[in-house]
Length: 364
Image (cartoon, rainbow, N blue to C red; front, side, top):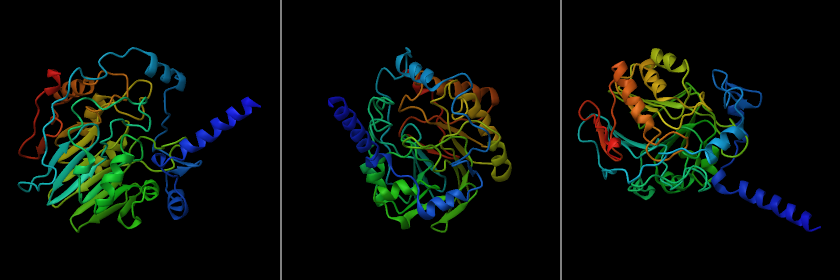
């Protein structure tokens, strides 16, 4: 009888945990109907354009867990605090050129035409609901916090993974944001967390919206997946094109390499700047994240004039050394003669005016 009570207690605890607000909520009603009507919805889930297994043949989930938790991986975190420049978050652009401020991982602020666009903000100390998964943010990356982002014009969320849709940051930033742009289905999480429906704009691939009569966003395909609990690919994952009066930016989110980059480049390019992931890769999951050399090729496919690598510099979500991605991408970009911008955390990049390229990570 005691065993039965223990098992029941475990079941009850499990149910309580998976229903915590941080996990969000699966789409339903009209939103679910829209997802079912998407061209890439079949077999009960949203699909990538190409067949995309989570890991290559012969690699099991348990193999990955063993490597992640028990394999020695030196250099996963920097030995000392990373240099961080205190940014002017609230100020306007000093001229007509877009400004970009990177805060580590895939979080950055774009200032353009008098507007402020905040992308995938994660200012929590860990990139998951549990501190023992994903580790803690690197030293020096907590100089900026979510409370500082008041009255953001547009909050953009690429997809619902914890390291892009951060519950604690959303609770502080989203209620004060004037508008939200995200992938189809992500609005269900936001509504569960108390964000009013009227400010949420969800896009399917190749759908567009213009906000404030000046800023045009288009969701385009990426090669990735979604899910905050156990059921995957019930919400969409996207990259976003931002078109202003004078500039075009590619906001990449998460994506493995594939032919979609060249197709986007042909249809929408060239881009003045491409912000693309370059970290958290491994041969155990080669289809859902890019290796640095692939990131450079993706930027070339997109016809990007300048590449800014993100998805590194704050958390260690793979087994590679923390600064390996940027070292490899600098070398690959040099070989391909692709202009690269590598700002310090908090440093302001100004297109056509200030594009820092100092190898600051070598000092760590």
